[in-house]
Amino acid sequence: MADTVVISGGTVALGDGSAPIPNGQVVITDGRVVAAGDIRMKLPAGTRVIDATGKWVTPGIVAGFSRLGLVDVDAVDQTNDTSSDGPFSAALDVATAINPNAAPVAINRAEGITRAVVAPSAGKSIFAGQGALIDTAADADPVTRARLFQYVELGEQGAGQAGGSRTAAHVLLRNALREAQQVAGGGGSSRADSGRSAGGAGSDPVIANPNESRSYEARRNQDVLLTRFDALALVPVVRGRQILAVHVERAADLRQVIALKREFPALRLVIVGADEGWTVASELAAANIPVIASALSDLPAQFENLAATQSNIGRMRAAGVRVAIGTVNDDESRMAFRARYYAGNLVGLTRVPRASGLSWGEALKAITSAPAEVLGLTDIGSLTPGKRGDVVIWNGDPLDNMSAAEMVMIDGVEQPLVTRQTRLRDRYRDLERGALPEAYRH
Image (cartoon, rainbow, N blue to C red; front, side, top):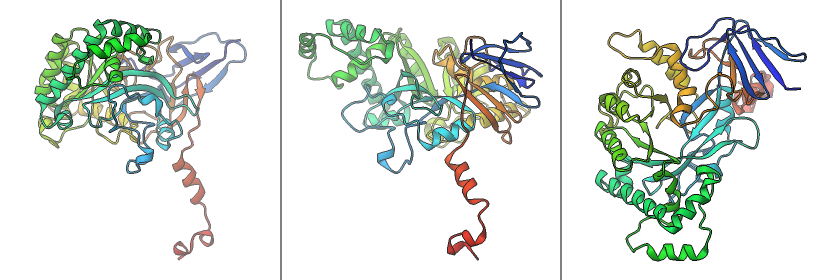
C-alpha cells in the first residue's frame, strides 16, 4: 500500500506565485505531492492525517544561492572547502565536499530550507568549478543533483583573479570556451562528451581511448591555459548541457554577459548577483537570461554596484526577467534562511511610495519554485502534483520574521528540527546557579 500523508486545515501556499488558500489540504504519497490546495480527497485507510488548523503550509524553501555544507568555520582552512588554489578550476566539483553533518545544514533545515543551490568560490582562476543542488535531510546522502552548473567570476572579482582587469577576465573566459569547443569538435572531445552523456553533466570527464588522449594532447599548443580535466569539464557548457552561472553586478558587465550569448549561442546562462540588473532589465528579459539576485542589496559597497537598490528584483520582475532570491555575498555558508525574511521585505516594499516589490505569492515563489525554474529543475519548489514532497508547516506567515517552522518534510519524510543551538539552549537554560562554573555563580 502506498504511504500517504495528508496535511489538512492550514493556509496552503503552493509556491507557484498564486495567493494562499485558506483551509487547504496537501496530499503526499510515496514522497511525492499528489494534490494540494482547495481539495478534499477520499483517502485510503491508514492515511496519516496532520491537523494544520491555524498553521501555514508551504513547499520547502529552496536556497537560490549558498555555500551550505562546504564550511564549518570560515577561518579554519581544514573545515572550509569553498575554493581551491590547486591546479584545477572548472573541473572542481563541490558535490565531493558536501558535509551533511555541518552545523549550518541542520540550522537551515530547522528554518524551513529543504534544498539549497551550492556554489564553489573562485580560487586563483575565474572558474570556480561545478555547483550542486543538495537537500538538507538528516541523512548521509545530501546531493540531489551534482554538477548542475559551472560557476565563473567576472566583474570586479573576476578582474582580480585574471590579473587586474576585466579585459583579462574576458580573454580568459573566451579562451577557455573556445578550447572547450575545440575539444568538443575533435575526436577526443566527442568521446569525452559522450562519456558524460550517460549521466548528463554529472558524469566524470572520460577519454575512453588512451591513444585518443595522446593525440588530443599533441593537438594542444603551448598557449593553452586549462588543464585537460578543466577543458573537458567545459564541454557540456559550450554544448548547452550544463548551465554557466556568471557572477556580475555592474550594468556594463551584465551587457557583456548578454553578448556572450550571441558569440556562443548554445550557452545556458544564469546571472548571479546583478545588483544593477534593473538598469538593463529589458535587455535581460529580451535575452531570456534568468537572474539569482540578492534581495535587499542597496549600498554602493563597491564601484560595480553604485546603482544598487532594494527595488532591483521588483523592477526586473516587472520587466519580465525571471528572478530568484539567493544570499549572494551574504554569509551564504550559514544564513541561507535569511531568504524568507528578504522575501517578506519585498512584500513590504509594495507599500512604499515609488518602490517596487513583489506580491506575497511572487515573493514566496522567489524562494521556492523560482530558484528551481531558473536552474531547469522540474521536480522541486512547489506543491503541484508530481513534485517532491518537500513541505513545511509554519506557526504563522512564513514571510514574517516572527514565524517559525514547526514541521519540515523532505521527500515526504519528517525531519528533526534539533540543532547545536537548541541543544546548547536546552543544556544550560535550567541549570541551578550552584551547577554553573565558578565564574558564573555570583
